[in-house]
Image 1 (cartoon, rainbow, N blue to C red):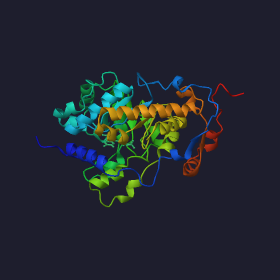
Image 2 (spheres, protein in one colour):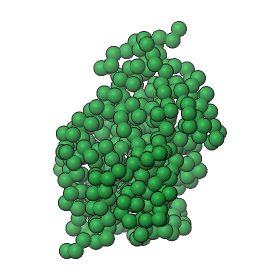
Image 3 (cartoon, protein in one colour):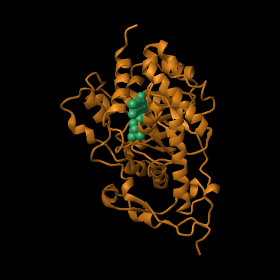
Image 4 (cartoon, rainbow, N blue to C red):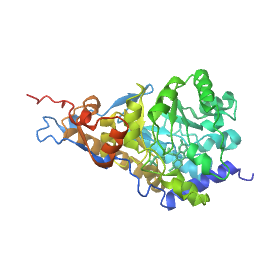
Length: 363
Ligand SMILES: Cc1cc2nc3c(=O)[nH]c(=O)nc-3n(C[C@H](O)[C@H](O)[C@H](O)COP(=O)(O)O)c2cc1C
């Protein structure tokens, strides 16, 4: 059967992200402006530090998500299996790529099916908000059931749709479609950006619409402006650098709603994850580094996840935090452009700097 537009687009995204520079060139996540206060006397053992947590009803060995990447082609199938097998072994969560391709062509369903290699992981399905306006809820829930997902990401990709030659440029009433969707699903719906971040106003609207979590997917990592430019969105160069830096997005969302927050967009190490959690996220995730690792195979993905776990634990050791709850309250020094952005949005960097340190050692 001839490949559909969706299948062809998904394959070209994979190829472009694997071979070209698709990250923000100037704008950063902001994590480089965020520093912990080093604790010379940690009063802890690294190996006793607890980084386990729960997410959407499942236990995780670490607060990490492999973000939504792919599905819908033979190459996607191989990548999904590697990611899922590594996630199972490492005890972390995984998102599937947009399931639009399998809804349009059910013969592609098996390229998303990973439960054979990952029976226990927190597995999250994926659909675009534009598809909520297009498909009957039933078609989406069937796709989610078919892969055995525990929750579903609804991705908000207005930037990508606006500059894609074949994109959906009409998001009128998208919030009411989302509200209807959340009210009809029996599994949690998690709203997710794709690299341009979520502001406080959008977080408030999403929370009101009934989502059970928010993945900020902010600016500083993969830029969809860049990906689409490599495809053929000539004339849209200005959008390479578009979006809310991840650090600011995390703080805005955390200050607005009590929902679980996944920090993603440019998270590149366990240290970035530690900073994101100290800023207010509950979990941290990434796409591009795991895609690159998956191309080498399951072991490379697993090794990367284990490296992140070790880095997270060392950050916690060096700040005297024995668990994720105490990391969340760790004082932070925020300087430079990130401090300036915080102040412009009414957020006090001093508030983070003067938190009381959590430690047995405080006299
Ligand atoms: C090749 C590729 C394909 C992606 N496809 C999807 C997708 O189908 N659905 C989605 O919600 N996000 C998708 N994303 C976005 C990621 O989930 C993530 O939000 C974004 O890449 C930012 O994270 P990063 O900087 O760690 O890559 C994709 C990312 C990449 C690199």
